[in-house]
Length: 155
Image 1 (cartoon, rainbow, N blue to C red):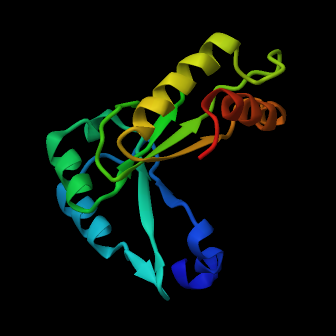
Image 2: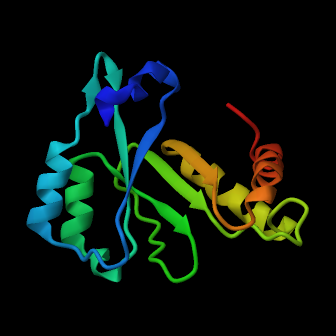
């Protein structure tokens, strides 16, 4: 995967999101080996990794410790039914905002965008933040991103 051209993005490359299915449960040996196998650079390009889990078995201190040891971010996925722990495990944060709605011009109600803005600004005081609108009402995601950028500002 890494050798397939993703590093051509150079310093524009953000974190790589690795998603695991809801039926994948935490196994310390498996995830220890997986995280150890992730490269931290390729052809001079720094590689950062975000791990998205969808099973409550990952709400385990052993998993959190593994993530911190490998400087991998635990994805904060705004999706009902999935674990959404706000646990700092890396020098960056990674959020997937997945609840945009077709009836909202900006994807999310203003109150929720204000709340996300506050959350992201708080995270940004301590670390770099990657936040994406994905899923939900896909046609609303660009408007949601613009509305959130307007609230958060840009670096």
